[in-house]
Length: 386
Image (cartoon, rainbow, N blue to C red; front, side, top):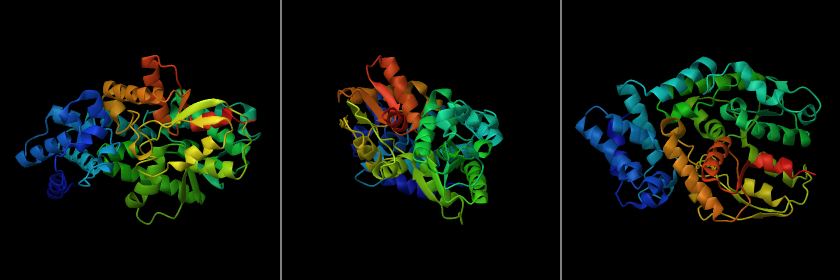
């Protein structure tokens, strides 16, 4: 149950200075007060004080938050807006019938262990579609002990347009000669959509199942190319699953940076200018900024041109906070905003380290007919191998 008194107290910390307007991508593309943190907090405060049922417009506004964390990072009063938004979502989930989009996603995760409702067998399609030479010459370890467990995530394994992310990452793991495995059919969604959608009880159940499966294998190192999965395993699971065994959690960029430094890869001269898009969950939420740039700098000939808004001030791709399922038009507008910032750098390629960022930015670039490629860091690194 949400402590409404504490929620009101947190909202009161907002001084309504308006600093969040400058950093909010939703406000930047809409110019509506109800789309920015200050406006959303006052909507929540008013509803809590009046004790009235949440209106459809109110629910829509709270569901339109990207939860990118940019407003909180730059809030002079230190208001953690994302936590308030998540509490509000959980509160109206408790008081009212679930929203259709969230209900469908939660139902899929509960019944099939993934956001799309695909059969569990489809978790292996990305690997089955790899060429034999890319698989390292032998069968992949599925649900077996290994030095590294690759937790690929829902989007990478179940959306064909994203298959190249786990495929290229797997190729790099094989190139480095690492001992790794995947959970395959036993992998569940990391539960991030449930946590940010106000479904904490279901998220806890999913997290417990994932921890149980991994613990049974005796895994001590988990690596994932999904920033949301990384954030969940590293920061959220220990809270959802008390007594969770100690596991070393890595994002793919961290492992690749280590391997590149150790000389595991031989990169050819690659003459191009790139810009790097920092995923919100990887950057602002987890503080991983240097490692992906270290990988890029290890490739000879690559020039890195930073966007004006980078690192802890990076603008969201438009795919955060479950926004794509709640308002695809707003998500697209934010994606085009980010692509326009990438174009300002005159880069040939915008690179990220998140399969969702890749999808969303690709959509924005396509809609703008922008002359810029969008790639995941793993894809770029594989293309640069000798």
